[in-house]
Image 1 (cartoon, rainbow, N blue to C red):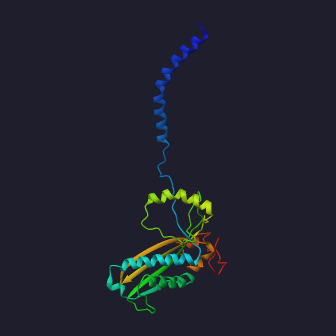
Image 2 (spheres, rainbow, N blue to C red):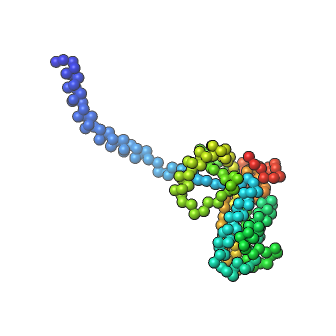
Image 3 (cartoon, rainbow, N blue to C red):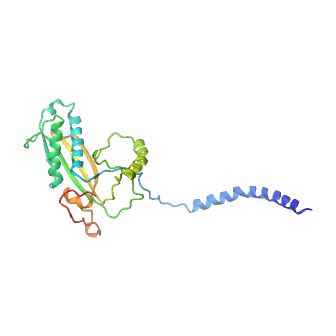
Length: 247
């Protein structure tokens, strides 16, 4: 029998046996993987999102403008409230609270609202600043957050998630192109504003921003974590500048 003929006969006999054992081998592999399955959910991160970073007094003015527009919308269908003066009340002390109060009053007047020059206690627009200091965190990869500098720190409202995810890739390219990538920060500020009339909330909103680590004293002392005595590495960085530091 020729050698080539023997090889063809041998291959022909081998192929059916492989086809027969393939399902068995696949079944065994599935059982092995099922046996090694973790009983704990795997840790994952949130999808990449965008968060603005406050680095200048202009950014405070952008927030004041947004808050004033919300107040105007809230009292638009309440004619009796549009005639009442609004007291702007800061619940914190510091450069941000002092400047933001003035900016907020100016923006409210520009919206055509009545603003009190003295406490009259009828309608109060209160704002509170909270500083959160995080421990060591990982940012992987560094998100391309298109920081709205020049045009201001935009406050995104009524924007669909599909638009945000679709724009994330374009934002990364734009950041690389124009150099607006913001660096990682361990300090965040939460600015909560509330419009009260007769002990009822007419409007209330909270906005979250990153800040430069050295600028936290412009806002407030960081909130103390639970069991702070046992936490290491959470001491605030010393404030090295008087003005708002830019990177």
